Image 1: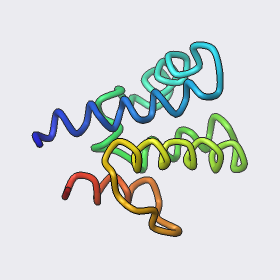
Image 2: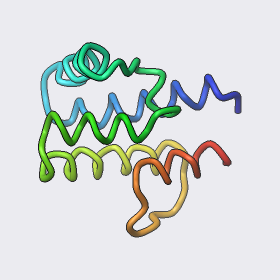
Image 3: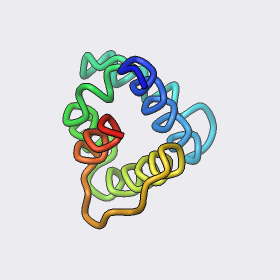
Image 4: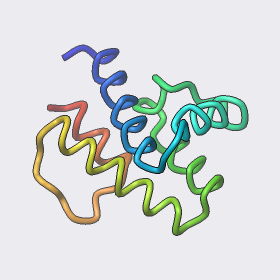
Length: 99
């Protein structure tokens, strides 16, 4: 799979996970990621540490944990791999890119 396709699928997983929080929260978060952190939607896969730092900044530690859990679940469903305990978002993205 091409890098741009993987980046889009990862961004879609993030969007799907955020939508579970209700409303149009995904579009709002993407807006703030771009405005405050200079992170475009399709750059999340290339800059996972920026994404994690931004989510932590926006939602705090507990909120970040919940969102990352939702995102990791979506990534597992989309890319069909087994759950690996204690894998960070960055590590998961790196693994997905190697699939």
